[in-house]
Length: 245
Image (cartoon, rainbow, N blue to C red; front, side, top):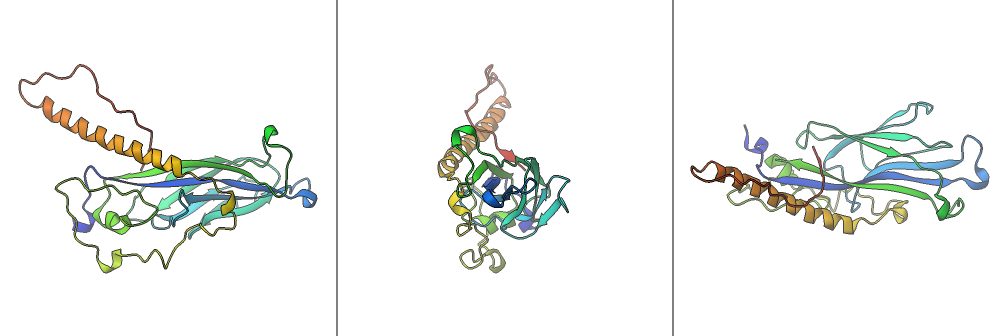
């Protein structure tokens, strides 16, 4: 196995993401079968470029749409349509070869009409429904780790003691400030939810999970020592579910 393909044990790289829809009522321009325009998307939780890990996104719309399977191969990973009905949209993310060979399936319910307590429909205030999630890549390759270790969309931990990596080569230094697929200047960005607090909570949960992994490893080592009694009670650290790839 080459150095670049060597996997880093006990290391996880994570990317907070948001997926959802923003829909606008067409008001006087609305018709029976065309009452709303809407956009479905996957974005970084802090609106940074996700193309560093995502190769393409596939959106599966309702069969009544022409060409219901839409493939987006460059950021922003989104598509816009118009219609009158609500339905579930399947979103499939495919990753670059050095990131992961599995795909990730997401599902989002398109919502066009506001809740009663939100008041009547308005052409100026859209209906926004977003879901915060985190993609966790356990045991990343050295090449992937080097490529994203300074990327603003990634949560990259410190390497465990004893693990050292060579300095990144010229192909691994990506000029993020020059080539970005972020959504900071997206025309709909004013409606995006701010998930900064959730991001911080997930970072804390990830840290607790790392501690739990190391505690479990130490417990296994202790049970192998002759004469050491096994603990009768399991030890756990409160954490949060993550979407491991």
